[in-house]
Image (cartoon, rainbow, N blue to C red; front, side, top):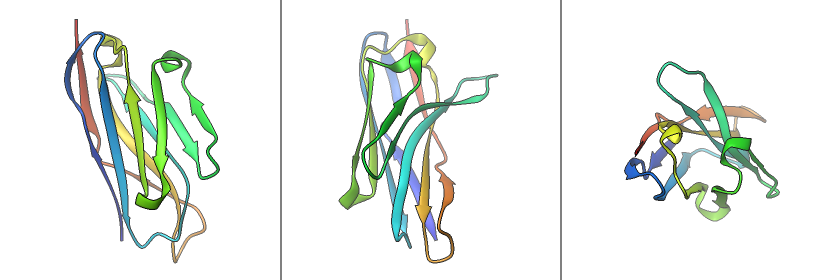
Length: 120
């Protein structure tokens, strides 16, 4: 059993900051990569940022220079520091993990999502 639990979402004014956290727990042998995706109302789910076990990061162009993804491998946790937030950042943010478990070399799990609302 593997579970991803997100936290840190909420309501913030434009220009403000939020820090999202996602902790993976359960029968995990290793983490290949973790990341964040978001889905605005009526829109598709898009990549925000990812980080591999080796530390390689990838960001959507729309968040470069404003968001920073980081990880704590000992805690199986990934963070997303979001600065200079804009109303267009409003979305449900989902944590994603690609894991090695007892049964799979690579399997993806999703969190339930946390809502981020940026007011103007």
